[in-house]
Length: 415
Figure 1: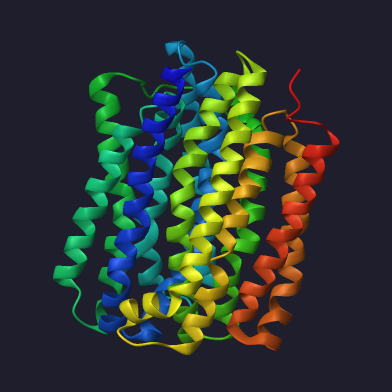
Figure 2: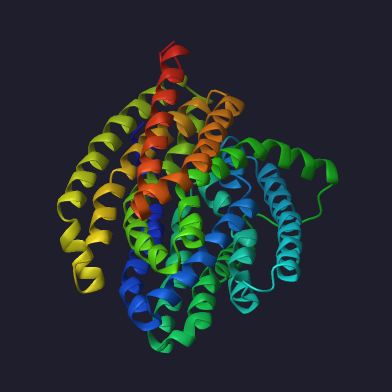
């Protein structure tokens, strides 16, 4: 048990470093880019960035969970690991081709408001999502390698941005450098895999690809549905309220992501560990889930209250002055990570663990669609803060639903 805890804590630490670089470095860049590019231009870049985040989610197709789960349950079978590696990469290449054709279609049919150069600048991000085997490192629980690759790439591109971006017309350079971070991470990761022979890229049959897509589909639907109430508001704000409001919202969103980024390493480390334990001793898996739920709830509620109290100070440090609307957004949005973290443990770590993938997908799809319905009137009636009202409302409904499922089905009751 001590060895299990040691491995889990090590993976949480290294994934924490990855998430830290993912959200702390953008916090460093945030005031610099707003000042250098201007609020309007910065908002435009964020609009395209959010759009490509959706495309990246499609390319990922839930493999960070399905492939991780598959590898975690077969950690000692090198042949199986190599097969999952090859199949996952081939599937992602197939999805990337479809996404690329979609982008070409958008360019042909919506030329007026379609900045093709900005689209090209974000293409490396998609290629990076195709080739970065995060799921492999999580499955074999060697996240320290992924941490080194990710942090190296992010530090390098952040430094280059600070040196080379000087004016608003440098929007394309800023976008490209942020995008190429993902590609650099992929190159470094694949080099390590090639040199250590952890896995190899080989031909797989169409049946394997089809089975892999079917297996990962419920995870994809769940993640994509979650994005309908986490990242969709940013896209709608950009279209409905304009780039300036999107820039303000993104400041609050970056702080939310920084808080949520503290939980992501816990989630990503807990998932393979719980799956591995569940196949050995279900009661030990249940105990770990319950302990995690209590610790996460206490820590993130405390962080939410602290951020709420310090919101004016935080915004002042980022913008150099206090902006009332941004402070109001931060005061509200800081509570979302606490609810999201609890929902993750109830949903991903508990309900999916017991094989209820379809049920979990149904819940996230329903509330994702509900958010699509209420987001527009929320923005029209409340303004930009309406996006946060709708997100909190949806997250609370999801929490109630997931808690009822866990209690009704007695999913954490020891045998």
